[in-house]
Image (tube, rainbow over all chains, first blue to last red; front, side, top):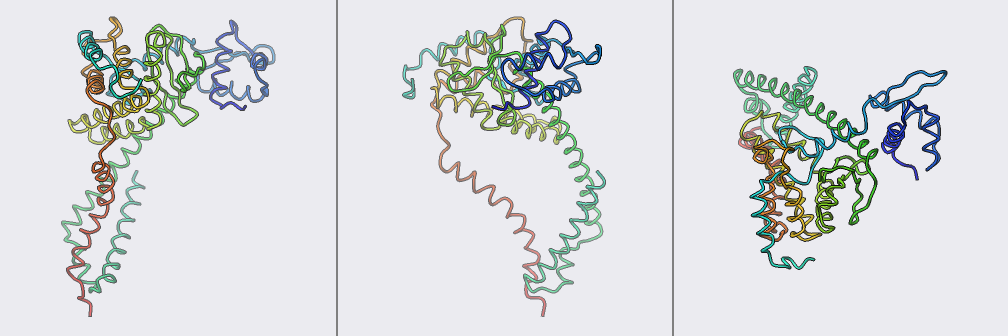
Length: 125
Length: 275
């Protein structure tokens, strides 16, 4: 199955992050090919796209380029989680999250009310 | 910007002319009388032109602002999606496709986008903290956000806020849009998994963790979790009553017709003046 372009970007980032040293496109292709066949040019395009977007940087080594990540996976994860837990409404945020914040005593009172609820409120579960 | 203003002015002049001819034909009235009725005084036209300029300028600024917002959000969401895809594992929980992210803080959220670009993310800590029923309810809540395209409603609300500034009206409006969206998503989850599990999942996820948050945050959220939980405990989700739905259909249908009706009045008064 052909996977969307965006997921290929994630796959390339995964390989680059897993590599200790700067990595060539050919090496990325080899690693990705272990799970599914991909054309060199496809991977090349995606990798270059990630460089233009600022995810990767490259250094010339011999006749080819080696790529490495500008920021670590933890950096991106931290940024993602920061927005996921941010509940300030003063700005259009990129993410929609499930929960907000509750004071401990308020939460306890609600939990008590919930437990007082009859077992089968709307004949569900 | 000025191009837009010119275009709008030109279109209005053409529309004005076309309207006068239409009125002449429709009511069999004399052209000069119709022109007098709709032409207006120099003062009126001055006010009209100034208003038009201001309006065009405002519309242009608002359009630019909205487009910049859309581009920024799109870029941020793309970054979050690639991050979520790269650092988390694919999974399927309760019939919902999710990305399970290894993280010590419980969180359930979604990255909105087009159908194949949207992601629902749950952290391993959230999977551990919630029972299977609670987890399914929380994920259904996120799925409802995506299905209802709530991110677009939020964007529209923020456009209104930027149009009217941080006035009381627009601030309340934006907060209400968020509040209603959360309730709609809660109801969708409650219909599928029972409101007990939604309420319980909410309580579990809202537990204050010292050190993470600044004091006073809850008052700002606009989507007060206590209100949502209380609402789920008190009453079963109901579908909108028939007359509410009917009103919802009739008002948008009547509203656009009303100005046209009002605009017809001066010409109708001159009906039959052309002999």
